[in-house]
Length: 510
Length: 122
Image 1 (tube, rainbow over the protein chains, first blue to last red):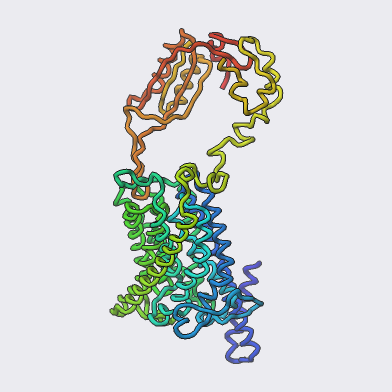
Image 2 (image 1 turned 60 degrees about the vertical axis):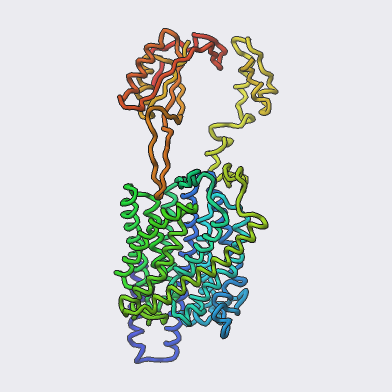
């Protein structure tokens, strides 16, 4: 029923479009425009919701790679960081990233649209975003906000299982309010990397992924490894995460969410480019998972579960920058190379610093590779379509675009690293980054949050197999007085009732 | 009374339990344990790093039986738990001073006497 109705509407729409040149009344044109705006708006908001769901992917990926004693703090962190970035990005992040400015200021940062108000269909002064799409400002704001939240989520994968909870709060505010928005302005919002250099980053291999991973790298250098990660001879030990199914569920949720992340970055449904981006995104992810599987099998003669997932994530990160600029054949190459990079990256980095989920490789190294790959594989026609930069090396024989991409990667890395290192250093000097050794061994769930993520794993739960003494049934205690052999002292009722006296109450020892 | 304590492979537990049921041994306590012996551990690979696991998962079966039953129980466990490979486990036999049945307060040998198999069902 529904389908048939929709087809009838579509047929009517096609007929109307065919007649449009003949009956070009102003009213028809306005109606077509309104339909276009509605299509763009629906697509941008739906894509943003897909990206928001990636928070669940990050939560499950991190939980899976974490030990059972630290799972609760991970999910609490994800929800708190999402909430902080929601509010901070509305107050000032969006204005810094996409607001208008003039001259030198505009090359660095936007300065209009702080704490924006929205009305149905209302617009803001957003030079770049308004050129890309007819969707109202509210839709654009929400789409750009969820990107900020993803970048913040990436920071913490490196620092799991030993970081104080307050650090997540203290770092989230300047990161979501300033650091991410500034880099975002440089490459998405009309800043110097985009307009002066023509650097291409379709959906944020550098802006979102490399920025998050670089901040995580700075924090990790000041934080140090988990207890037990390195033996006295400096050899890295495996600290297996508690659930490969949850980790890989996270990978699949991220893969799913990426269909909002990359195709949604068109901010536009009516130019139909988003459908092409779906294809490049999916092909790259598939190639990355398979390449990582083959690479780790060559190295350790086993099909490592975690590495396959890391391969898919690395490929998705890599295809993020070129997804709107390259053809499917190039997407497969980009994804496969990312899958190889992530395996060697995880193993090499593991010898040196302790990154439990492999975020430095999957988001950092793959983000760099993905950004550079535009300089190799960008289709000149798509560069012209998107209006940024030019074709890549294999099409043009020119290194110009590759040079612009390298400059963008370097500028983002150096800036984010310097700002983040400074912030984490200040946090370490004041409240400290790490929990105490005792708390780390006990687990962050009980020491930081006073409760376990998996209580029954660690304590007897009332109503479970081990029942609280007060819950013992009456008849069992009455039998104590009817013992056949009264050789041992019979304990009084009061002692049995009182849990504190339990060891003497039984009288077994005497 | 003696306590027969056998460390066995987890996958042989059902066979050991069946063999002891057939003898009429009246009770078992089974514990999951970790241990090491002549059988070396194994190596886990995890994202390119290695973990040498030196402790193997085993099952400990404890049964307190009358002195006359000890040899029969040991024979039953040995027969049921043996695979012939390193790692089949060991049996330890300890003296037991006394025993108390909590429900009734009865003491001594009587509470670990053997029942004929038809006295209980599975």
